[in-house]
Image (cartoon, rainbow, N blue to C red):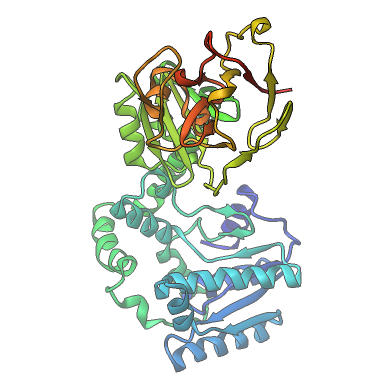
Length: 446
């Protein structure tokens, strides 16, 4: 490894331009110290940034002094900040390692934006790449965890991902690069250190070029992942339609996709359905009848060859609207637009054959009337029937969609439901030959 290899990697990967100011994340260890030396020898524009996490007492403070002295020696700017990492971890419920990572990147970004650096460079190398790959493989994070550490992501660049730990050590010896030893790196209580000191040496004995070969494999995994992401995204767009504000997936179309589970996950996971729920949804695609599934924010209804997905509305308390006695005509705007008209010339009245207009025997009504949301347990005598039926069963018989059912209101006379608004009146309140006055109610959708 030399400066030419370093610059060639930066140019090939298009990490940054030669004259752009780069903020180097420097711990003082061998990896970041060698990175600093390479930047210096390549005559690039850079500054040092160091986080003192306060986790190793005087050793942490000595690391900060080392970085400060290094910056002064090279005549470059430096930024050092001490953090109470333990308190931060406790306050946010993080592990110490997670807290340190959160603090580190957040502060680096603050320095980058405040002082005008283009990118933040970290000293991750091929062995770090292999360790991360193996950690994710062991933990079972799926394909997304196997594409390794990205060479460039947002404002983070990793110009050392062309070289290995062994080559870094050889470079440090050859060019007499000073650095600090972190004794915690040798402790195997952490998974990463266990892989570094116990697993990778065994793999290295079998294949000395494992870390470099794995880097090529990771790149291929990443490439195929991107191809897969694009294919799945195109599938999601192809499958998902919008009808009346709801997202709709036709079951027959979904069943044509292969692999089915992957396309179903891509289509349903954005709505908050987890892997187990997606499997349950798939298992009922070919079964008869309606099925309902809930994610934290959405409801999916499988019915009549469709998966209909709509956002769960926060239920609000809706008071019943009272209609007092009136002499001729009355209008209502909320919760349903209705026009009430008293019809005295019964013999000239033609009863409309539509559920959008109710024709009721005025003499049987008890005022005040009320309009309210229907409730579970509600029942009425549907027009043409002499038996009481629950509204929930009536909705099922009429195949009324859940969304429409939830928006349905009822007109009540006393405790009786006299009209399921927009659908059917109660048989007891129908117009008969003895009716002397009619109450005509039109649901006004104009």
